[in-house]
Image (cartoon, rainbow, N blue to C red):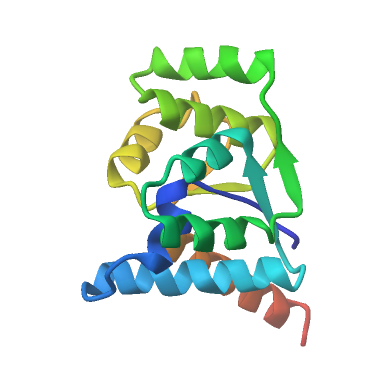
Length: 160
């Protein structure tokens, strides 16, 4: 399946973080694998105005350039609309922070299959509001393992 994948900036930047901690290293490896699948066309990386805005504000030039290189692999782009801004307002009423609400609104507007983030607070808030969010919000490690497991099951079911 060609998944449409939206990653917020903390997720996109994870491979550039200090990889000493096991969790950060695992997330970085999962994100690298996901991006490689997007590069070869197995999946589709989705970019947006809010992602570009946040990346361009990055104070670390090295991280800014490398994150920009990752985003250059995106095959879909979501631009700001009145509907997205209204949706972000609705999400902020559910206690999502402004930029998190924007990311969610952009991802929903782009009809993505999954919104990936390494932000535990955002993940918890999304879990608390499952009935109000129109997309799946997941940690990249959990999502990748689940997706690869499902693909193996499908492959075996089809007799391959």
